Length: 404
Image (cartoon, rainbow, N blue to C red; front, side):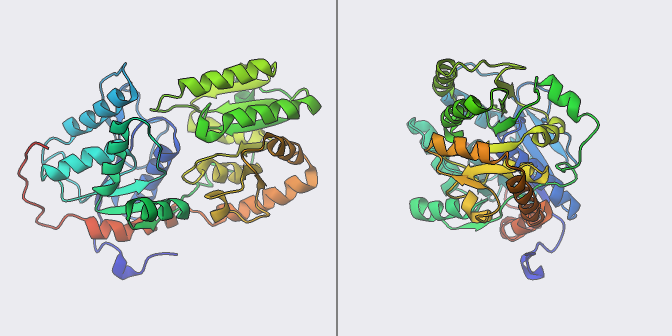
């Protein structure tokens, strides 16, 4: 539902959106799509991200983008986060660099940089989208996560479960903005290069099951591997396509456990093998991979929203999801195959069920109905009340730089 005119900004806004990376992670995908949709509404939204490679974002954007100069880091996750916060602070070090009406962080890194800019009186405040909250063992990472939430002037969430979590754990109120999908990019109709993209990944006749997010604990990859091993006993030509995996966090230990599980199951990895890990994939190739897959396998243990579910459905691909929030918030019981994410046997049975033609036909039709309910324009409009509340006054704050 669109916001009433009284809750909208009275004039076009210049919005600085900050995200943590130029790689295709869910929060980054959301930030870019939001920027595009805000510009289509008549605002000027500029998406920023630290870019140590200098290669820019993983896709072209219709909104302005800024690749923030970023130093290479070889140390711990704490070292990496501290460096990226400092990269942002160098970029926004002057009043001229802070010449935006609204500042909006999509991550803890951006949130901490903006919190410091508030203390330096370079900006009046900021909006923060909390996609999900991590359980950090490192106290410094935990402190940064808390600061990026508690110091925000307005909070937003993409799902009701995380909004309730912020109220319970932080005593903080957040607006609900949801997520979106672009049907012009993600569509069921085949494209001329679909077959070539599938061949380049080494995909055969299938069936092909697709997982998104790489080898990561909260994505439940170990159980997906266990389920696929059971599934492949009845489908010896089946392949598991594991897309993505770019992350600022250290998942080395969990990835080692996944590799051990693959070895124990006798599942070879690589192009043309039983398990095909691709690493990060350009957006231009993702629709073809969704269309090639017989199902998206996404029984995530902790998810902000699960944006790839909408993308898969838009491409006519059924989804297997966890029977818990956030999926149960925006999907009805007939929209997807729901499984206990801690039961590898249930995941394996859903993999097999997704091949049934009658069930597939029903899930595909339901998926298209879900997609129609999630345009990016609606998501962008839901941001406008928070932006109006946080927008810099016409005269702006008194800009007195000081150390924080």
